[in-house]
Length: 227
Image (cartoon, rainbow, N blue to C red; front, side, top):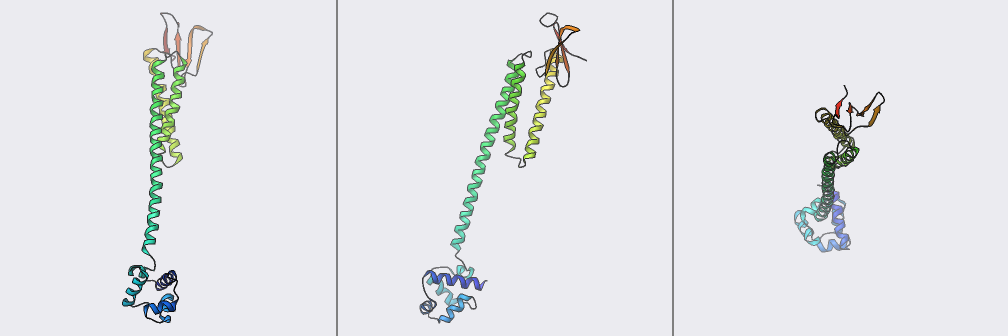
């Protein structure tokens, strides 16, 4: 129990009623010196007097003993809790929006990739271009989703990079299978050319293999991987 704090609280209560120590002493039937000793914390009211003081100031005995109004603390705590809840609510709304945006971007990007690979023939470069464009949108969606569960930016970047590597690997494997087993032109080539010593061959270069298309436009046309 902090007597100095209690005394300061009693002094505050007296000033709120615009009373002097002598006027309060007269109200309570004690001396002005007694009131002074209460307010400096050098002495405390006895139990009977404490009840009278509480009634006179319209406060509770626990509030006098605590040296402060509980309602003020409660109001402050309620306000702080409300502010914290509001901030949490804003964060939840933001997180929800990020999730929705991330899912929509990822789904839309995936749709573009699938559409590009199914609608355009392998000979057309547009299939690869649109597939790469869809991959960028998909990766943007993945990044938005990672912001909802990864706090560090480096981890988010690494997660997106891992997804990019997986996509790149999937495109490369699909190209290899298309050429090896279905004799189709690779979609994700970076160079197309002809060689002077074999004018009836078209060479398609990718990062991991080179495909050759022989006798293009004829019944003998064939696409295979150059060993």
